[in-house]
Amino acid sequence: FMANNGYEFGLALLAASVSLAFSGAGKTALDNFLNKKFS
Image 1 (cartoon, rainbow, N blue to C red):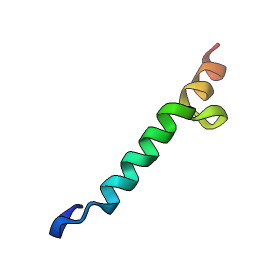
Image 2 (image 1 turned 90 degrees about the vertical axis):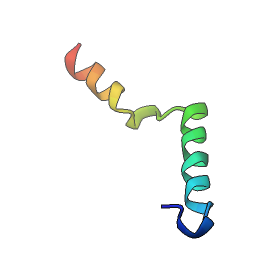
Image 3 (image 1 turned 180 degrees about the horizontal axis):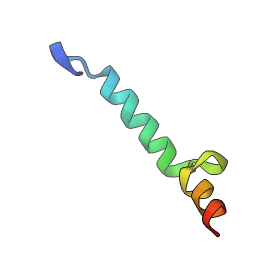
Image 4 (image 1 turned 45 degrees about the vertical axis):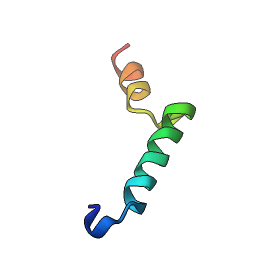
């Protein structure tokens, strides 16, 4: 996905990953759903 020396898509993925790592997914997180379902 980074053909022809394009870095914008990779940079956008990195920004989204860092944002989720710092803020957390919150109510929409899969582990919250599974925790409520199995407890």
